[in-house]
Length: 399
Image (cartoon, rainbow, N blue to C red; front, side, top):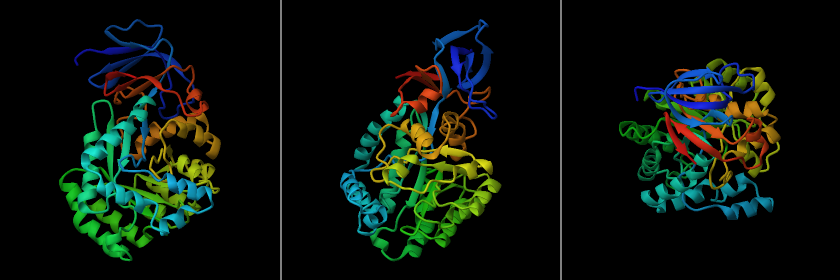
């Protein structure tokens, strides 16, 4: 495209550095897939009209930095068990939890996983998302982990960027029962090089927790992933304090996720190394947790707070992703403005994506257009509101 297209009369929440939480009425110029100009709505821009927002709310395209959307089956039976008082940890130790989904996902074909994940993603499109991270972690063999990552790559499309994360270190599989060290070594020696050679993953993640992998195993895996050039992420401090968040931060991780049991030293390490906190209120809600992540301390130490849906069949069977904004406000005490930043600018940081997450000249033209007068409505409505349209890399997609 060698000319500018315009979105007229946008009530813009730009989510840039220093954003006050106010919206401004502007015209948005788009050229070659990027934001080319922002002008006052009183002006008359020259060029093609892409969309007249008619004073509707416009935000950056939303970003979900933490999902597990590729899987087979469900775990509704575990929901009933948790209601009866059985803990998530106990279910996992009995062979349920992640292992239950692993069994079903191994049995599914690549095409079956693609079709079900594509169907799930329709809700993210409807709710204004333009970038979604998806993890592997329900295969735990070379064949099945690579199968999941190939599906993630296939889900990447013109109207949705899919960021793929290798989470083979989700739990120790039955083939390595009682041999966590050997399994981590196998991932380092076999799976990481394969995923790198085939360009199937953007990042590597690990679940550092007493029911999964310890701090030493985390250090080993993330150090090797860093050597191979992957971005680093971690599930840490969800059910207990493991030290994983600090270990990952010191290795340069772009995000540490969950964080209910993070302590002051961990927070300082994250702040020092630029690691973004990704909070997952849906999992907190579904597991009926009582210990909240220390939001005030994270903010005080200037650690960016992103929000993820954690959509998965066990601890967060999320089908309405915009609900996480309401949950972050009601459960964790964030403001509507902080919640919006958590799924835009800070979510982009949690994926190491510096070209999106805010509406400013030079940034990628990923936008969401809403039939709203204020961004507060995105957090206010329980279950969220569907977007009227999305712009992805400068192209308009009507919902």
